[in-house]
Amino acid sequence: MAKKKTMSSILLTIIGFLSVLIIIVPLLVVFLGSFKDAPEAQAFNLALPSSWHFDNYKVVVQKGNMGQAFINSMIITVVVTLFVIVAGSLNAFVVSRKKSRYTSFVYYLFLLGMISPIQIVTTYGLLQMLHLTGTFVGVICVEIALQLPWTIFTLSGFIKSVPKELDEAAYIDGASPMTMFFKIIFPLLKPIMATVVVTTAMGAWNEFMVPLYFFNSSSKWTMPLTVYNFFGQYSSNWNYVFADLVLTALPITILYLICQKHVVGTTAGAVKG
Image (cartoon, rainbow, N blue to C red; front, side, top):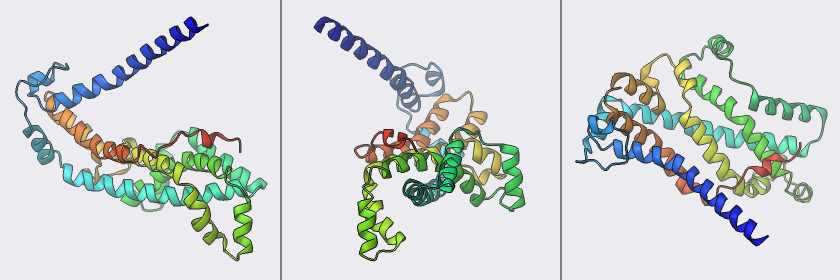
């Protein structure tokens, strides 16, 4: 029996090691390639650069309009994340605490949003009716709609683990529903909130299709779209493309490293509604 456990442990270790290599090796190729010249970068290997070309990043920033793209991405990511946190937690609280046909319908409607693909044509038509095509507001609204279902699903499962006696005690003390939620329930969501912040910010930052289809000007493009644009112009210069990829991934990587100690699993959101 002990021998079987040892073999299983070794097998799992090997699988885990190979899985890590599958992820780490491409990242190292990109990172090292961003400091190479064009011929060396096209080799796609793990060799160190013969000479380190830090000026690759200067070229990317100057020619790729990275400064404006960074600001655009930050605006969209921050607004989407803040709105999703507030609206998602409020919605999750209502559907978790108030049991009725209406709240159950709303809950399952949000769950449907997790599996339904975005309909580009109809969404574009709706934004056109609202005069929001090509605007930050329109793109932000679409991205909020994409991010909310998962957030509500996750937070509602977590809120169900919070004793209802806390709500009753707050009501007895004369607290309004909003006061009770933000002063009692919301602080208790800190363990899962870091996960929501990271996943929502990653989703908004890395979103490619929505800005591509719904922005009508390259001046409003986000960081991922600069990679798309840069690759089209410098497809033979992989060192520049790699540098662009590193700069695009860097902010969200820093956010994850800051929040990783607080990120928890999402099984709390898997509670049956």
